[in-house]
Image (cartoon, rainbow, N blue to C red; front, top):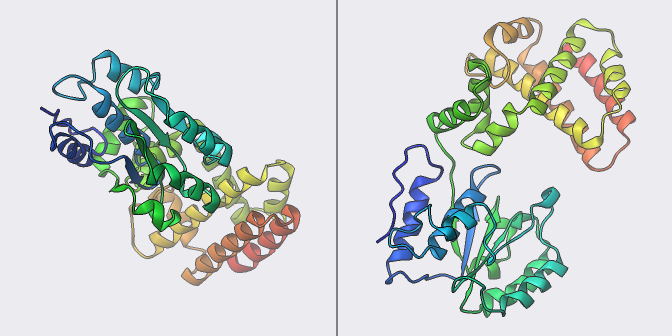
Length: 331
């Protein structure tokens, strides 16, 4: 007998139940040695992989029982036959780690009859790393099951894709994300929760990132820059960014937020009232002095600046150019 996920606020409930059906369809046997879990950032890929691992390793009739020693160890990531690769500092598995994985895979499990490998950031793997990993996909030991977590299946080699079962996680509805945020962030205001739900686009991880203290501080800085553009002098925008001695990565995040603010302004101008960051009063303040064309040009300028920075361009030159273009477009 398999456990049926019935909690209305559990992530990826339908996909978990489908996995349990497959797991239990052959007298409890596992039919695939590799699963490719596809989904956007923060959609719950790791949570899903851990649930599947618990179901595979649990020895109770209604697996995963969520209470036995095996399940508890899996969810605390302390099970001796559960191994993680990739994900540290957003980096993918390396060639050296693939070789280590293949070497360890031939050893028998310690506790149960299966060894489970969860490989995060699979969409960032280099082609040669994927080719090396292909060996275990083609000739998997009976005791090994692999979960590849990827944001896009297109980043994987066809030979990898064809040898695993693809499971796509599409994200959650706003009600579930709102419930989970309110449960965890009890001090957050209703406006903060609303904005995080809107920004999430089905991803609880994206919502968590949006509502974090660091993100709130970044949004405050982006709003300050927006005010400088409208109320400050020609080079105040440039001076504020340069004087903050911001890193390349933080600057890209800040520009992304600034672009989101201008997208809110543009959407408000087109009649949309479900904005991500700005409230209606704030949006009204800026829309009155900008045309739709000017907002589009501003967003295009920010995109160009981000591209320059991502290509390791000179930060000072990129921000100088952006400041001049933004000042020109706002009129």
